[in-house]
Image (cartoon, rainbow, N blue to C red; front, side, top):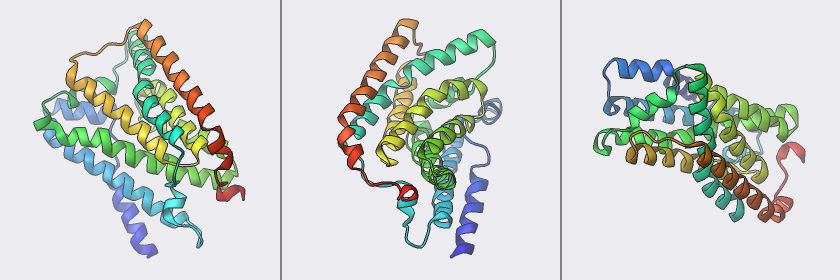
Length: 265
């Protein structure tokens, strides 16, 4: 069993050697004249590999009395936090998108954000695999690895969910490599981590991540060059913080009744 698990992990690590979002990967695809009909399946396979890696590592991490889905945090969450995840996922991208545009203007650096948009902007009949990879593959696989397996690993090693929140938030942002993308992604990463911390479940983070990415795909499909103005960005931030505050208040009883993490029992 251990040999099989290690084999799956090695296969998955090769499949995700170059993560979606690195400028080199996206720019190389575009420079080579590739289109989403090729890049999409490759990116989708990367997501599958990352998910397999998370399950394989969770299998190695679990104790004899733990199940894999417990290690990954795949347990029920309150309705209030699931709703907060869905609504927050629709709003969380607005201010970071404006921030990314400001950073590009201030620094003059290129960003992988634009190249990802180009890969997603074609007709759905041609780039549907790319859409699936970004809207579904990335949210599920990245959450399983970062706020599933790595969260549990850090929590067990440090004895603190706060440390797990902080470290996985930073690692998730750094995983996207591109400096501008990393900085702009930190608020979203913190929101996803807060959902995981507040709910003691991975499902709210998966839902928020899915809604955020699906919204980005829809915007790219329907708007050629979407731009977020300063006023809209701060309005979006205010609405988002309001949703988070309401979710925190509505879920307070569910949090107090939630079972403790095995680390703290």
